[in-house]
Amino acid sequence: MKYDAVVMGGGLAGLLCGIRLTQSGLSCAIVSAGQNALHFSSGSLDLLTHLPDGQVAEKPLSMLSALKAQAPTHPYSLIGEAQVAVLAQMAESILQQTGIRLKGSCEENHYRITPLGHKRMTWLSPEVVPTASLHQKMDIGKIAVVGIEGFLDFQPQMVADELQREGLSASAHYVHLPLLDRLRENPSEFRAVNVARWLDRTENMTQIIEEISPLVVDAEAVFLPACIGLDSEEPVLELQRRLGKPLYLLPTLPPSLLGIRLHECLLRQFRRQGGIVMPGDKVTSVNCINGRVESIQTRNHGDISLKAKHFVLATGSFFNNGLVAEFDRVYEPLMELDLCDISERAKWTNKQFFASQPYMAFGVKTDGKLRAQKGGVTINNLYVAGAVLGGFDPLTQGCGAGVSMISALFAANEIIGEISKNEAMQAEVAQWVFSIRALKAVLNARCVLLIALLQKLIHCTQGQNKQVQMASVYA
Image (cartoon, rainbow, N blue to C red; front, side):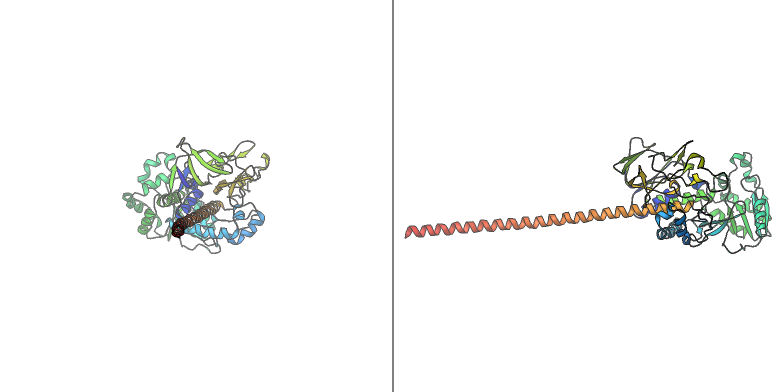
């Protein structure tokens, strides 16, 4: 099987890279091992919230110069300030095209409300998540924070208490939904995704309204755990319409419904554009010859190789086994690619639990075009994107999703540019071949004409010689 590009990894970076490639008319396949980090995310996306020295980045794009001075190997620093700005806007546009309703802008961060009621800075948030501007107080009136009885992944009293500390009017409530009694009997099954499968059913909406309505009579807005709207936002919008009040969802403990929905939207868009997904598969070996990856082999395809002009490594970090840590070393398992400078084992972690942990910045080392290196030699057609990159701390710098999307789009654009350049060269060569053949045809035609003229001349000359000979005989 041969493609223009094969992406190893089906998370945020892999999917966004694939969407950009297929948008440009290229054939692309994604090899995805299984669940990815999106299933454990809040559904909000960070671009950059803090510099390595702890300085707050309210306007991410304006802080890129300072970031480069402090972290020259950060993926944003390698890509360049101007390109990051362009690619951030492109990411916003692509996400909008997939049908995901997000709010926010790369020009300035905003606050989202966390499951504990705290404010956390971010770039893009789902429309259903409560947010606030950086320098403005949230003004939505009285808030009813409603939890589900028996659902331990969301504590409405903790949320309400924190909102009150922020000066907001909030009250906590629990709703008992008899339709969830089956799940309530088994706490291990009482999770957001399973709850949503019951709450999303049209026939259950009336019972939900009957139970919630008495609790929110005095409220002007309702906060619920994100346990509704697994496959689409329609159940959320219907519940909001029938309650007659603004309804907001707060992400829960993993698996996260908002993160899963984001993943599914991206996956559908990639497939709509003709992309091929190989779910539940895993790359087992990479065939690299003379500084180029020729093909890869996967667990499910056995001896059948996947060939492509370009490859993208987007296998994630330690969480997804894109990086592997042993007691005394860290390595990239597919090709033993070069990694960013890794200190001695004792310095991998910081004793301060909430401080930046050095191991979080471990990852694959690349050149300025995000191409992987092995033994100091660049692999010309292997690009690296997402969490497997080194040089950044996604948690303390608040840039995990941003690095995934920006690096993915950068790699995709590089591939598109390379293929376009090669196609232009091939077209130019084809034009030259056509011109040479045309010239050869013209020359051949002229040669034939010249030979014919010479033959005629010879014939005429021979005729004249005969006449001279006959005249001399008569004389």
